[in-house]
Length: 247
Image 1: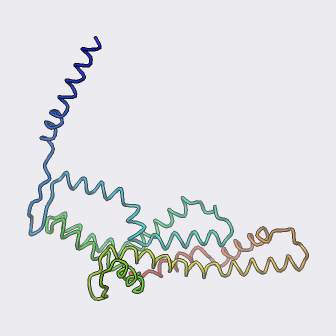
Image 2: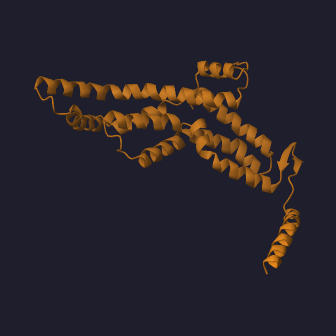
Image 3: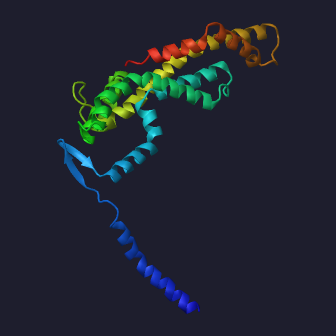
């Protein structure tokens, strides 16, 4: 009985490559066709490309949009207030996403008008639509990126950098993220200054009163929250962040 079972399993293993080959005949081949002077790929390849883009969408959001600056500033604000868990991470990320969408809306609208809609109407090919949308996104990123950062990463990649020439995305992306981090820390420094002054004043008052065992953070926290509410801090932070971008 065991011998018969082994023979059956062996026969099935021999037939498996044939069945796989037969199934492959039904899968559309990867064919590139010329359409309107561009390259048009098979529908299965388009679906595969969309799925691949969805998997790297978080990375693209961080490296090619306003998300990095906003989320870093909001995280620094929480630390300055002295309540690192309030608002929660979900609220901070959600607020950052909404503000990112607000900042990027003019760019997205322009990409929709010049790239997506002509492609849907069949006026341009996939490659032409991709080139048009990437050039629009590059313009936004270049406005936020320091030339010194672009020069540093162009030297690291051993390529020549010229502001008048088209910058490679492989050089632009790390330079853009680095510039965004620098700008976020500059804004965060200005946010932390008033909170630092409140901490110093509270600590000095407690020392003058001889209350050495009482933590200054316990006393300064309500004053920092009150100060933040009185100056309408959330509106100031959100307004300053949005206006700090050059669109």
